[in-house]
Length: 457
Length: 176
Image 1: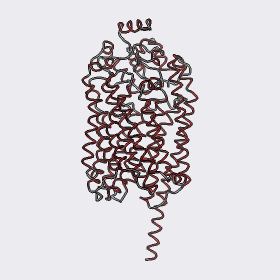
Image 2 (image 1 turned 90 degrees about the vertical axis):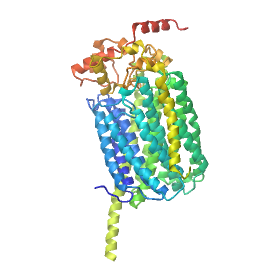
Image 3 (image 1 turned 120 degrees about the vertical axis):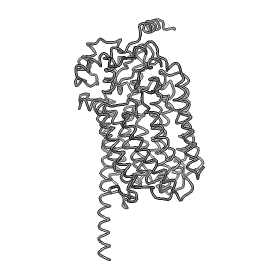
Image 4 (image 1 turned 180 degrees about the vertical axis):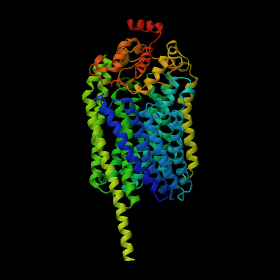
């Protein structure tokens, strides 16, 4: 029933991922639009809260996670100089994972939520998703186990770590509320997941992707092996401690706050180690970003990663947090890592890997260009609208402007966000169409080749 | 280590465990967040009471995506007149917690102090009628019973009299 064709897991996870980026971003755009026309599609199933939750869960656990798994099903065996342990299991876990995501999606629309941000699926879905992640992890660990290349390239470190951390972190965050002694305790556990879904999954797999792609795309060796080790262990050491800063200035004791804030600031070290390594590798290759869309996506991704990680520690300062917490700013920040940085590197991974798998170039270079520019310009419009909005809103609250009035003040920025968001959304159709065409053309060409060979034989 | 995936995994696991110990396990032993305040006791709703059912409706309809229940000792919150600063013990029975992370709408920590039942009900059915220009969607699709329960829950979000008195005293004495 499930194919064991070479690289089929990677390809199929990518296809599913792109399907879900469209669905997930449809939910996102609907969320943005509902902030302008609150009565749009307002009913028991598509009420604002449901749509927003579905958007967050789908873009992270459906789109981005599936794109990550697709990348790993190609990059891990390549780095280990072996084949995937089981393509069949890879395809089975894909079907299973997608069924679970569908269940979660419908559960959220029906109002079943665990409330925990980044862990909103109800418990019965959480358990299944854990099994699905476990199957993927098992398959990929086994793949590393049968490696013929003994040296572990740094990307493998990141992938192995992430595949271990995600299921563990998932368990902490989704721990059943009835077994937790207090609401704030659950808040800490929930934000442990909330922050580490980003820190120990999105960031680490994404960085692993970049470490893989950069030398391939530029044809140059990695700038420093030493630096990549420092970056890895520093992320592993400090990211885990970041959860409490989400409850800053709030109902948590001072010592927990400090335990969360200090590591948040120390995170600047690994970020710098990682980026110095990326940009060191790029030395002399920047001109190539003009012609290579995957390389351009990767580098734009690293720049957004830098900004996300400059904002992050800054926001973890109690003084900055006191202005921007709870405002639109946070929403802008929350999109920079998942979209600006790591969706971009995943786009690059798809554009690099898919042609290798199907044996043909991407169908349309112009569609890739359109995908890049709509994504980038759209995101900048989107994010700057929200950042400006957040600062205006934050200071308005401090000045004691009545709340409803601050909502009315936000109108132009919320519209700007929706316009930028529309561009980001449109961009993804260029990706989906291009992928569809590439795969289809490759099939046709293979058939023709086979016919020709048959004719000449 | 560069040749041993198991070594990488073991160290990665240890570092992760440190983080869990520090930010998840240790707080379990903190009295401040694990014993209820008097106002926190008020949120210990009897099973199947109107307030408990209302809280479920609040969650099912995603109210927490736009409304925090989280008052900080900061100008942004005091100048918005949000009421007493929330303490860890206020959330002892708040499970799943409804702290929230975004104020698309105002904070609801002590919203029971601010409006009466009629206003709440009217606002849920037709938000524009009470708050012109608001971007809150209407919840007119809820049944009468559901609306009653939700209003009962919202009205229950109050501090104790003593806590309120204390807060008012502090407000009148800004040097304190």
